[in-house]
Image: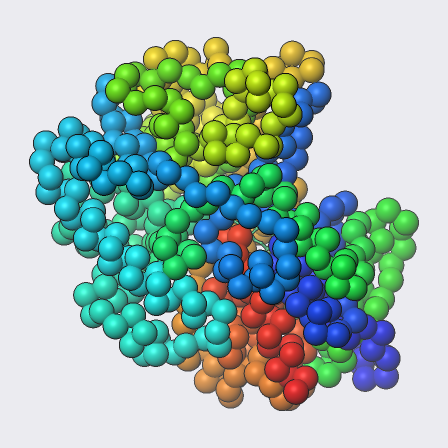
Length: 547
Ligand SMILES: Cc1cc2nc3c(=O)[nH]c(=O)nc-3n(C[C@H](O)[C@H](O)[C@H](O)COP(=O)(O)OP(=O)(O)OC[C@H]3O[C@@H](n4cnc5c(N)ncnc54)[C@H](O)[C@@H]3O)c2cc1C
């Protein structure tokens, strides 16, 4: 399309109002740009929202994402966000028969006792301490680089400065390190789960996607801690939307972008006004795309890459009371305050992966549970809090979209039943007895498959990170293909014909091959998770280009 004569009506159009689109828009508006943000849904926030999920019940659940680790303090400060997180004292609890493993982040003597009780010796506790001291040091060194121009692989390796750590995390399949470091199956499983969140893979995958997932799960905040957003995840994106508006961003919801045309200097963005009806077109100097790379290809009329595949079941529940545990040595208020692992032994994880990869619902679907209201009761009405009501979030692993292809509802019910049976097996009373009911007398429980997430939030294939996570360094081969840093200052117009527009790269890892179209969402290099990082980096790329 010839867009050379269309006047730029906006400095910047942002396609999508997920948290990353809001971060990018706010940075750019604060830098003096006119910014229009177009969001398909009736509200902003994307996969980072809170909702009253159950009819007549005043509990604001983080419907999709629920914990914060990767959000740099710098973004909260730069954008003057009224938002805070709270640390969880208990990092995890893993039931095992009538016993279990409680990891208390503030009491290493207690944690040591727990390891001895479960494994019969101090060996795995000592290995645990050394292993997480190593990842903590890597976190301290790597996390600050996420909001700097992309380092090369060699630069990042120098920054890590520890050949053993580099090899364990960046070069060898994580399973090798886990097996060489820990001997107990439960302990190995707890470590491995961070490599499998939202990522359908296994410990020895030669592509190392499990390592990439693991790295992002242990570097957040420079510590690897996963914190509770006070007021729920919606409090974060509400604060962002308020900051965006205060900075002058025009936010239009119910606006689905259907096409982007660009000559590299000026762009035209076409969108459907979902409520008012009709098609509109707006001109812009730069376009930032918060939608997935898969969607971006469609918007640019380029060839779409293979659809990513999400692999999780998300269940939101409200309980009248916390269930009692078979392991009577642990108070449920502690066990559910951290990440509560179910059927996540190392061998169980492998079996579940193999069964799901073969197209079956796993016999023992692995999952993890956590109770937000134990750390932050502010998401409940005072009446619910006083009555002892609690939220419960379950994130199930190894539930790839392919399982749901032919009979989505039946498979979801089968998977939900099998998952809850694994939970019931470690409880002293059935979970069903503890579920609250809504105003219509229905149990307060909702389950989301990858297909639901695709339909509701637009996650391609239900992939929670828009696609598999990338290494946090430059893909030098892709950059060479493009003749240099495609998102750098002065990138020159026409896209190279053979370049895959979805292969984000360039100085900030947000380039698309078009000098004025940038990815600002989870699919960018160093995107994925609730971080604001790709939003920040896309804004930096735009501001540098303008210099
Ligand atoms: C069930 C679940 C649990 C998760 N748990 C966690 C967690 O605890 N912690 C964590 O850090 N991460 C978690 N994640 C991942 C995290 O939520 C996402 O990676 C992150 O929210 C992505 O943010 P984003 O702004 O880049 O994209 P999104 O949140 O996907 O937002 C993209 C926005 O673009 C809009 N859009 C798309 N196409 C168009 C179009 N054509 N026109 C206009 N608008 C469009 C969408 O409607 C959406 O609002 C979870 C995700 C899910 C689904």
